[in-house]
Length: 433
Image (cartoon, rainbow, N blue to C red):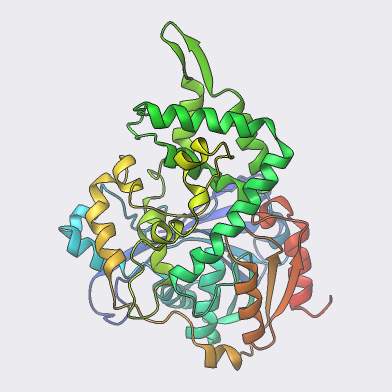
C-alpha cells in the first residue's frame, strides 16, 4: 500500500518494489527497493511524463528534499519525479556491517555485493518502470555515479529511455581503475594548490595538524582512528563549490590549549568524524573501485597502489621537506577499513572484492555508437571527481550526445546551479539551445 503525504508545494508518495537480487535468475531471491514519488501540488491530477533521478555515489540514497528544493523545483514544472534509492542504499535493502552478516561470511558477502553495480541498478529500473509509467519510457537524470548508471542504461536498455540527462557523470568506457586514479591524483593536487593559494594560512595549519597526528595516537569520539592519512582524506570536500571554504573553517579552530598542552579540540574532532565516517553510506567504500571493474583484472586497491606513484602526497615526507601537506580526494584505501568502526567488520569482504577477476562489462560501445536516445551532459571543466578528458572522450563515442562544458560550476553544479543547470540541459535535449 502506497502512502501519500504533503510538503510545501508537493505531494509525495512512498513506493516500494520487489526485484530479483540477480536479474539473470528472475525466479530466485528478491530484494526490496524504495523510491519517493514527487509531484507538484497543482499538477497532481495531470498526466505528466516521468523523470527518474539516480543519485551520485555509489552507495548514497536519493536526496531527501523538503518541498521543492534545488533542482527538484525545475523538474516538477514538467515531470512527476521518482527519487530512487538504488539497491543497497537508503531504504532499499541497505548493505552495511549490520545487515551483511545475514548473507554469511566475507566470501558470501563479497559475492552478494557484486550485484550492486550499475548494470543491476539499470535492470532494477527496467523492472519497476512498467509499474510506475505503465510502460512508457522515462527521462533519467543521473548525477555523478548516477550518470555512470545512465550510460549503462543507454548500453543495456535504451528502449526504456525517452531522454538521458547527465551531470558530472560521463565515465570512461574502458579505463581500468589504475587509469582512473592515475588521472585523479594530479587533479586533486591542482585543487589543493588552488585552496592554499586562496587560504595561504592553511599551509601551516595543515602541517601542524598532520604533525600532531603523526606523533600522537588519536581516536575520535565515535571510535575512528584519526591518522594523518585520514586527515588528508578530508580533501574530498575540495571538489564541491563551497568545499575550500568549509575546509578552511575546519582547520582554523583545530587546536585548543589544555592543561597538558595543545590538543585537537572536541569541536574539530566532532566535525572531522562526521566527514570521515562511512556509517551512513558504507556501500560507498565497499564497491567504489568495483564501478571501474569490467574485465579479468582485479581493481586490487588501485587508489592505494597508484598513490605510491605520487610521493608528494606522503605527509611525513612533506613535513621533513618543509613542503605543503597535500590533501587527497575521492579515493578509498585499505586503512579506512581499520580506522572506521562502520567498516572494520567488512575488511575481509573488501579485500575479496578488490581481488575479483570476473567483472562483466558495464557499457556497450557499439550500441552507444548507434544511440538514438537524446542525451545531454554537463561536463565540469576541472571536475575533481570525474576526469574531464575521460568524459569528453566518452561524449564523442555516444551518438548524438550534446555536451555543455563549463567552469562556472564544480561537481555539485546540479545542486548549486539549480534550477539553471537543469533548465539549460532540458532545453538542450529539446534542441532549443
